[in-house]
Image (tube, rainbow, N blue to C red; front, side, top):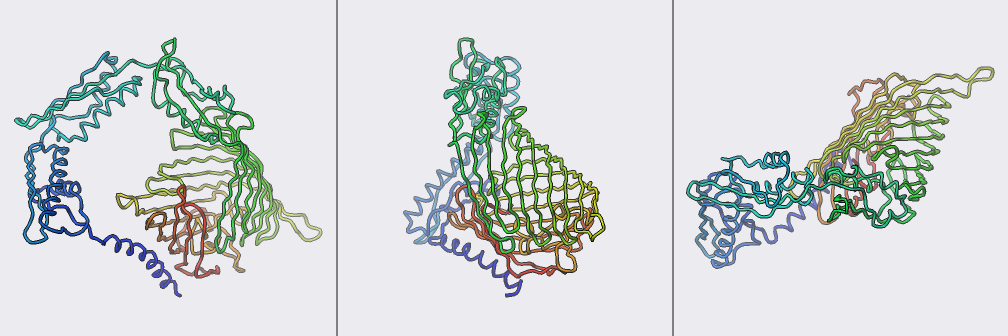
Length: 605
């Protein structure tokens, strides 16, 4: 099958289940409960039509038509009132014939506007500064449309502002909303009970923290005793406890009553995970082989919410085993220290690499989604590449930033994420295997490797059944040149998570014997159209592109693109994915198969 034929077949395969689902939905075909007449404003008419909704199948008789029209009139009247049309008129009717359509004759009338809004305090009012902040947060502008949703939102906003200013027990007591039909105005009055200003005490542990040291837990509180209550402080404490990863459940809440000092402690309950956890992962691709990935974790050995992990990975191209220790809230809350050694063996088309490393990273969380990492690694390995054998020893500092604003890390439906890293590298490499009587050649290494990746996710329908996803990845190695930059540190493209349709490391410069050379710059892009078909089943169309350059500045002269189709099965926490991809263009110096297959857990990006 040619590439164009394979691409068309992929599109057809994706289309078949979608078309089948649509065909099933037409039995019976839904139709509007009633036709809306008399509304010139397109936006308002569409809102009424959505409120009226559909009925299953064609109307059976005139009695059924009148019943549907009456139901539609109730829905339309409610919608008009919420939009501020309190003097509207909705008359249900039906058309002619044995199976008539329902009709709504709508006269919206003038739209009611907002008049002056009032706030009345029930009980003791808040301090003056808070009173001013609450009234500023009302945001009901006189003369604006009197939409019910905005009025009700304003009431909730008032309570939230009070809580942010320390009035933890604030609540809406009642409200009066007066609509004057004579001057077409709405005048809302909100009665708010602020309650007392709350000052916080320390943490109150209901189960003494389980296996975690009590003193360690008490240090996680982001407030000091006698500070004014802030709901963000309580939420941050909960986040710090959950981030440790050593608890099955975490409950954090302000105590309902003050203690003898008039302060309110925060009641904390944590339930420990089982002491040990084993996880297994599997994957497969036609060029990268079978992947088996496992971790064995032990929690709270040091009684400070720490995690000791032994990990092992076995794959044709990349195998390693190691140990890491994770210490959350290391120097300050929200800061995690992770360190440990590992040994590795890489066996790719471009090189083989056998060695070990010692890695230490310190990651600080900012807010909910942003992270800043500083790290250092010491690496020693023996590399065999196209140029021969080389012993390499390097020291590598790391600076990295990342943030994730998606709704689900493993299966995002909306949002965006970004990460970037810079790794200065210094050390030496020694070419081995020199002829007899000659010393092995030694070279100093000094270069900077930087890369960044961004992706975005856009739902194309209300139910988020269809999602457009896009990714871009760019990198550059500054201050180095080939062959002095060791082969494992160069950029390559092709394979799963890169440019699907091409072999692993198949995109980029090659030596004359077809061995991948790697490059000093990289650009990759991916576009996906993801569709949920039915229940846990889904499908994907994708287009990947990429290029690897021999210079630090990317060039776009040799772009490789692959197209394909994928299928998904949602496990609840993440989808199983299987992708079929074919290359669009033939690359000089690189062998390639017409079809590549990739199997793993989680979306490709």
